[in-house]
Image (cartoon, rainbow, N blue to C red):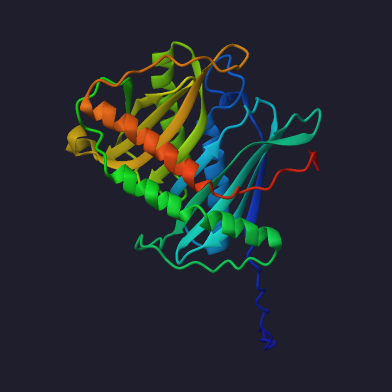
Length: 341
């Protein structure tokens, strides 16, 4: 007969960490285009989304969904075979939201010196797994000078996002158009699923980059790469088995750049394409490159229809808004050398 000793196992309180780092090697399968100098922007966004998701769940202790990804400058390619680090940390919290700063670095393992490839802000929202409703998260209180600086940098972007959202709501994307455009249609597969049973936000961003690359390559007649993502807004979850429509069009061209807006629509295939709902809206900028990766002059697009002229002006307005605000940098300049530990 076993007797109880009357002692209970003490509960261990684990302090929540506001940061996480993923480290892995960029694989040949991460390079989408034959002959490309590095990993596609869409794959990098998928890495960022996974790291930010892990950071958000670690902090909130519940399932989280991507709400926004934005202001991403792809400063250089990440070659296959490089060691990649994705560093994610909480910058600030709302009632149910977590603003997460992400930094992607890579290093040739033969040299061991990390340099930055891009950084961005991602916003996740904590969800109740039973009801799907948003739920409160622990408040993040910055305690160091760097944490306070990062919080201030995140707050400096709130008004800009609001103004851009207001500007975007003024426009439609269903009028007559002769703009370069491409639509990819397919069904969401079980392999696209995240840990909550919906399509992973990072997977959807790779779809967006694939369509954006397709429409710009078709227009330019050259290899193209994403150099900037101004904002990716997630409006509704996408279910496995949904019919997906990724609709990308060029809205403006500069001397070298091509501005692209993309809508991801999704819904039950039995309802038909006309009943698909907008799940994601994104704006990207692409450039054409030669075989050495140098930018080429852009083939010029001249808007003809009223819809295309309005979207051309809309693209200029968004650029002006970003230039006017000039938010604080999310990441301080990196040290001269960051080596593999």
